[in-house]
Image (cartoon, rainbow, N blue to C red; front, side, top):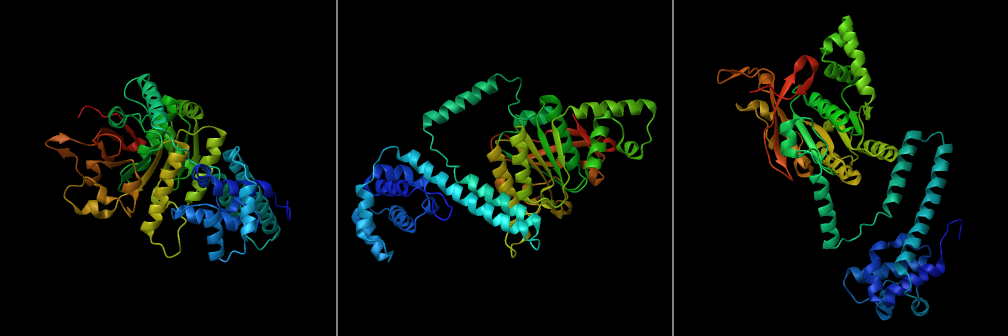
Length: 439
């Protein structure tokens, strides 16, 4: 230990020697390592040369390493490298590489804690900026051991068969988290693990209402653990609308508190149902991607999350360069939401607002090009669904038939399945979607 930082000189030397003298060890282990794994300056220089030669597909041996060190004017003599090679052993190299990673993490944590301690005492530094910095650094540290292993085709097939067998045991067509709507579930087979689902529409078309319907159906029918990030509505508004939906009482009556005895009884019954649901609500406005991911990781650690819903994507903050435009920021947000879905292996549903382009066409049905500030939204999403209600555009009759309250969930992109236009019914005064009447 030097200057309070832990390291093991002999271990560093042994691994470097093994990388130089044994091609098999080099090929199988160099991906686990980086410069930060080595504490001594000479060891860092030797490793960087090994990696440089390996990256350029050049021979890595005693002669090539010493030659490149001289070429780089590294001040590491031939005898030092020769001693590394002569004293190395190939025993248990991979395990030793992970020990080096542990030392690296310890050093980073010590340095980080020292830096944070100084900033915490400095009252001129914003404490929330310090907190965010800590979380970012800890996230980066945790990624150091997140080394993806290769899978043989046998491993892949075994996992595939296991998933197929599990799916065969389930009733109906639902494999993932249910939407609660028969036709939507038929097309999607439920919201799948690791999928980013974009639900888009024009303002006041019913995005939030549909999201709440998806949430309540997942919680009540499958007892799923869901977190709902609402950047637009307050928790009080959400609570009233959830009660309105379950109790089947118009939202305005609940908002004004003008309820008769029967309705009060229904309200308390709805509250009892909601209290049993595994639902977490966060109404932080201007939420950043970083904050959302951190909160999801914390909740997932406490109790495995099954689904995340964000209302809505364009109200989030992305961490991009100052000169970045809004499209780049939205792209950053969608990329990170997709990354979160993969990391936690759960569906992430993000609501999005469509551009005004749809209003300029005679056919008001949305299309993928209508995604506002689309950036990589279409690219990142596994499924894109649009809400379309003819009544929104003043159309109450089509072909002589009443279409009041009718809606469609237009699945315009589906990476792992079919497209379709499942029918829904919108009940405006209770702000909810239900299974359609026959139409």
